[in-house]
Image (cartoon, rainbow, N blue to C red; front, side, top):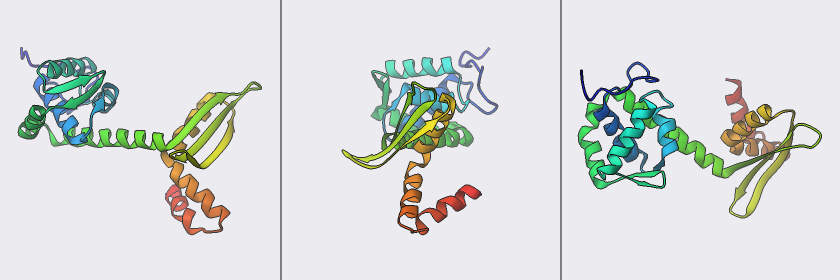
Length: 195
């Protein structure tokens, strides 16, 4: 039996089932992201894409931290120079499809979190039933755009919240285009929505 074989529960076909490859993938991910990643971001990327087993990922993170290949500062992981060298030298050992899927997933997560900082939301329950969804786009201390929506239940409020986080800038342009009678500002977005 291969002692380097990893648990494969929850791993899709083509995912990683070798402990060494999992460690290389973590180094590759941290080097490619170009910034520190939280444990949750790494889990969402690698386990969320079914590329590695959850428990194997935690073991690999612990091992890499103990070896000082990555550093762990309260659940935020950074790659060391040694880790970057390992990533460059060994990334070819990883399947291209795994690297591509991991890279795309982490970029989407980072972009979404950036949008979440720009497009702020707040869901509050209402005394007479339903929920209020406040959506705001701010530039430092100045509010550019804000509105409230009454939603019938928490599920629909969370759904609308996700859409605002993802499309807040486009929603702002559409409203601005309508109020200033400038259809160019919303035409492209509406056409994109039709497709």
